[in-house]
Length: 243
Ligand SMILES: [Zn+2]
Image (cartoon, rainbow, N blue to C red; front, side, top):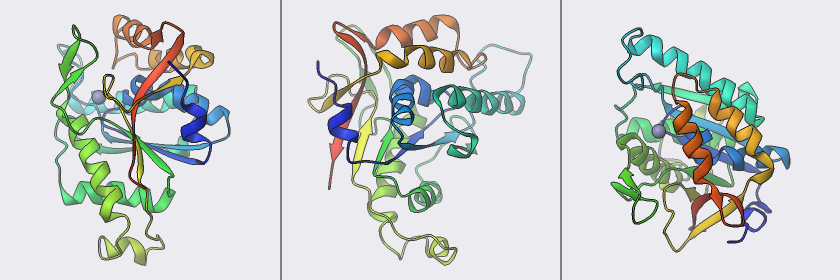
């Protein structure tokens, strides 16, 4: 298992992370984001939904209150990784209600045209079932699938072509092409790449622990354990280069 950090990020300065829920950035790529910032890269995180339905069986808060709590937790967690408040966005779409719509493509196009990333990190758009190993599988959350689908559509062709969302261009933005992606939940894919984050374990755990209401300790421990490989700590993402 080799570290692909250098080979993939050496010629990139701006990394856009687009995730479905307020805790997904820390779960999917918290170590990578901390390492990118440490190495002087510019990272912007855009979260699609507010996570307001993640309270499970709790009855002491309603969806609106819970969403507010989760947005605060998203910011606190991002700060642990080294992000500034200006680098973090939440589109405040209702949890579980993200649709594959032109309107939502436009919201991501805006960030691509404004931030002009060299590569985008997002979820898995292809599978309804994620496979970590023969014994460990889970349903790929609908919000995750749709987030990744929206991201790929936003990147091509909607951010590039001036005929899409022309009102954005009148407001000072310009078209942008981005053709490289890293995607979560492709552990067994031939294009899975590994990113060593051993130096950033503390930051990763502290960031996960800021999601006091979104995650329980058992989940945090399992997310930390998941990245432990035989020769280090690696976050795993599938690399797609369409350039
Ligand atoms: Zn999620």
